[in-house]
Image (cartoon, rainbow, N blue to C red; front, side):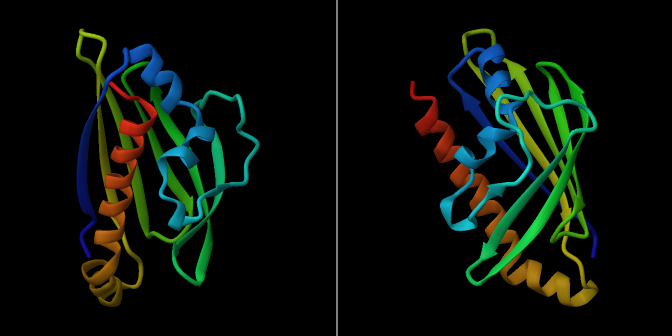
Length: 154
């Protein structure tokens, strides 16, 4: 299977410094993830701004009755511009997530997520991605956009 590429863009009605401060703190991931994913950060991240090389451990439940460990590493940061997290251990054969930030100059920030992922298990994984995983991943990012609207009202 060729890795899948998804892109999501959201305008956050806050200046880039405030937007960056929120998104660069792993503890806020739980606020952006739908409750049905049962996203639980296991690493001590409260009050810590991410840094290159940071390892973050989670427990997630991508669907009812199944939970798994997930470990990502922050592999690149350019302050107020972007950061990248890559899966080190987890449910995907590949997970490369770029978070890009652009100051719109009017107190708003454009945030773009570029995700490359691949489901394991060859042709079976391709089928599972087509039937289930792709829709679930898109749903998580749609819910994240709703959470951003709720957390950052106009």
